[in-house]
Image (cartoon, rainbow, N blue to C red; front, side, top):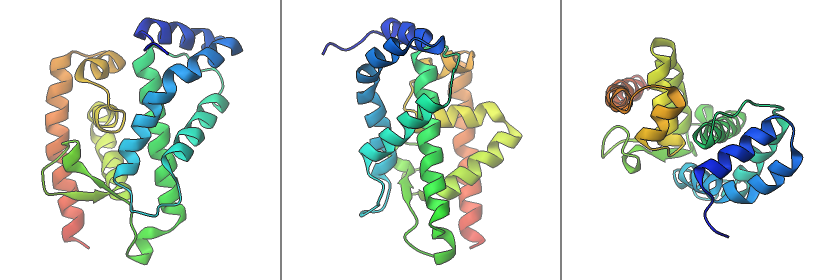
Length: 193
């Protein structure tokens, strides 16, 4: 299958938004590969033997996307941003349900130096990163969204700017400041443990 254009995906998303079930059927194979890539980024940082596999994460996110009712999709980037956020929520819920933090081990880890989000030597568990992102969103929601879209969603600077309706320069600046803030927060959490 040829790679779908951004315009084709956006048109199908908009048709799906207004209840066109056929559009969803056409859209699914077009977006599956990128959804799988997003899931792989998440799962790459998980411990080996994690009971939730990449394909299962994609399918769970897909089920939630379909079940979430009518969403007014802006475009392809908006769809993948929401998908990434859903996958993050699924993994966070899974980790919290397993009570990993209280057991003191087997905490799912995500390597930030692969992103590169914060620095080259820092491993942060997904729950701690989620907590730090929540704290950042209270202080500055847009910076938190930039991290979520770029790091978790794999969106480019331009796509992130499009979703947030800001300039690329603003995204770059927010990304830089958010990395510094998250590094400080995550290091503070390590010191207090």
